[in-house]
Length: 260
Image (cartoon, rainbow, N blue to C red):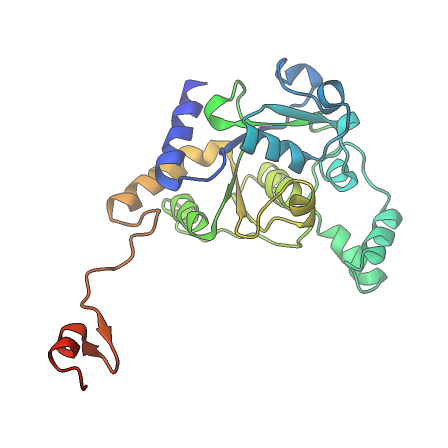
């Protein structure tokens, strides 16, 4: 796991996130879940949504696994392939919550939800990348917009193309982030959804970024190269200018001639 721990240190150096960058695993079987991972029902006596598990990992430094039987979020259970939702039930939910104007828009919303094939994974496991004991499938970071800009610089430095993402404001970090990055093998920019904010304490200034773990090394190379040219975080503001006030008059001139 040393290489992942070292890459976590590089992310800390170039991005300086407020919470731990996360290693995310989507194990195919229960046997692949790390033995010491905290489990919602066994260790906390309650079900959790995957976004809550991510929050516990990125803020507390825990390793947390949520399996099908431990999921407290029906949307996440659907998109992870644990318990595919009845289409009519999703339409009813979208309309009840006013996420959708009518039945047609509700069906369009459901069709756009990223999901992986049932049986593709038995659970989702989150852990700080710097402490991971498993090989991650996806890297997940919560960051501010300026840090996100730098991650985009790193992720696109070798490919040249932009990052293409879509946003619904629902099931964001778990589905539009982790699931879509895993399924499509592509980096994803994430606007944290309502669940992320209500149950997982995502803050108003936070965005998220999900990346297939196989692409992290390339992203770090891109960060290093752009960092060498002064494109950095914190962003170095231009400060080598002469201060001016009032009609573009130099400050020194005002003291020489106060009646200006």
